[in-house]
Length: 165
Image (cartoon, rainbow, N blue to C red):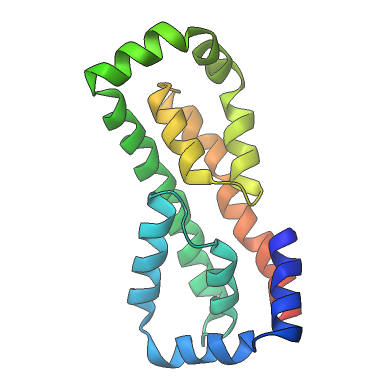
């Protein structure tokens, strides 16, 4: 929500976001935008997904492109999960996690679904939560189940952003 308010403020007082999004739609291929989005969502979520959601509204098929973004975000979360699993394969990390994080691992395994769902729905770093789930060896099937909320988030945010921009 804060990001949406920021978009409104920037659009009204600093910069014409509609013009920027129309330029992006005219000058960059969908493939390039989707690739940048996927990389960002897989590795630390550097670029806010709301920018890409707003971009879909300016494309000829906004809901189709939004669906593509939502599915890519879901898949990027899985990539981040497996990056976490790869990080855990580093012996020093494994020792640290097993020795000093035992209590947290129990809590993650118990409450990890809530953490995954909250980060999937809110503007929190979903890729970092996904990596943490991988590092803590959270059950992958449960991860996938709770991460579906990420797809719902894109549709809910699109309903708001499409009305604003």
